[in-house]
Length: 310
Image 1: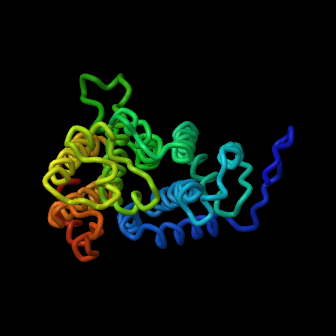
Image 2: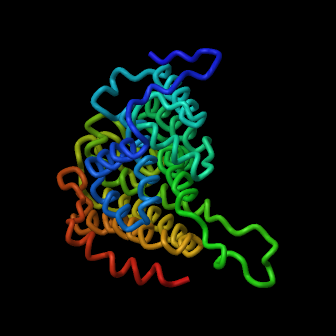
Image 3: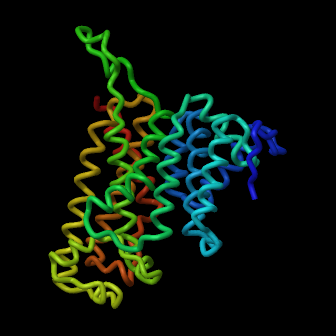
């Protein structure tokens, strides 16, 4: 158990910074092949930083969704947050955290999005339903919108795109809202893709008010009923997710040029999952919406074209 003395503890890591980044790379490649593919489109320094962020986010998520999730308590998350504070204080306690400590120092990152993500995991400890979309929005922000905020600090901003000659003395525009919207769009996509899996764990992330609006019951969902009511409900959910993708698109041109291609690629890859759900006749109970690797690679030229438009 992590104990915090009055003075900062010594680092307990036994690897170099480069070795820690390699551990983060391995975690990313193992657990998210699509995301990892996108990071390979980044500059070497930025991809390493994103691997460090992903590895921390993955381990945070596994506290409530991983193999040992049954052992996680509110106190577990409190200790995890204390460990996060040590990372930001440059006193990482685990080998894998050394890379994140280096990243937050290099990019002068804010700790708050990381704290907010932990708050999202706390929600998963005591909530398995969301009455309204406003309730769900808060959850999506915490577990995914925060990733957009973390990543934006690494991606960097295009100062030339941000400041016109007559407006040079103003602060450049940072697309934080758009970054959050992309995270939320991806989380809404995850929710729709994983309806069947979540139902098996007794969880319903589609807002209860939306179920009621289409006269579709929780019992229907647990039985995997796919009918006209379900089709209409899913069309509504997909439309909402696509609106967030559209809102996110407007911010990509403000990013540093070397960051636009991977962000466009990630947006296109993830949004295509919604199209697969549609082609599967909205049956997310018996068919997992999956985009084949060759199709993911095939989107890169289109993503490159989009990244050239400012």
